[in-house]
Image (cartoon, rainbow, N blue to C red):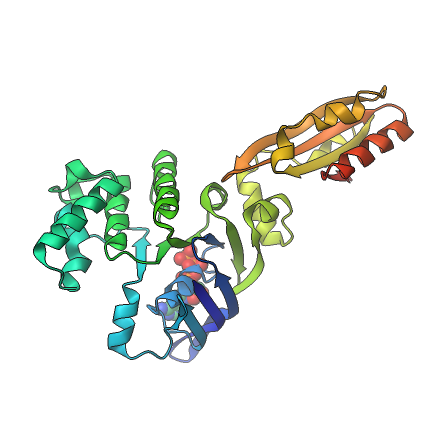
Length: 334
Ligand SMILES: Nc1ncnc2c1ncn2[C@@H]1O[C@H](COP(=O)(O)OP(=O)(O)OP(=O)(O)O)[C@@H](O)[C@H]1O
């Protein structure tokens, strides 16, 4: 649905120049929720804004739904942009217009008949849960409600793609979760492809299928959210993952524990099987859970445990081998 090839952007101001993004290739499938995470200044906004050419890349090509946008004449580009909705951190609503008129705005620009606009806006108000707020003005709404208006407006012309520019960064945690659920719901109901940028791993973990980590204008890591989350490789990724992991470094335990400390990671349905019990039941090995998370990422269950095994070294080896044959990832805490 979105194909970026060799996208770079250099900003020039006077004699200075900043290479905001460097030779980025990215391919996002239809119906995917794809997250880009990075620190301030990493190039997230610049990259997102090249997708609808709000930002003209210095090099490279942008294709959306198979149509190359780079190089299109202005009129054609304007039409193609209707297939790409966008929402913003600070909502960008028209202060002097009601909720209904804000949502209707892109439909009026597209010169739809009045009755069709009214019917479509009613549908959208229902989709985002604002039926009772239609005649209010933005100043009378909470942040979460304003973002709902932003989402409804972005969806007005039935786009294939929704770009989200830090859409929950101005919201409190509870409202953030409500907006994330709404985005997930819209993705499921409408099959719309969502590309979002954020600096919060929580947002990625809650709704994204895949994630790219961007640092210094380059993608330093990319993969399925569960894989990146459980096995972060790049230092920046590790930093982001530690934002949401309320754990301490288990190596701290090495000095005080007598047994062998083992990390176990697992993903998928095996999360809910008694694998540890089964592997150890016919031995005299004792095990203690020293640290652990069993949770879900989007719909995928996963677990991360640190276990201390005490007992016969041969039996411990056999338990570890049995866990590995069940597909668990097992490694030493060292
Ligand atoms: N219009 C501009 N003119 C000059 N430099 C710019 C412009 N926009 C962005 N930059 C520079 O490009 C780099 C990337 O900025 P960008 O806004 O894309 O990063 P970001 O990851 O979205 O950061 P933030 O989360 O703070 O918005 C930064 O060094 C920034 O200063």
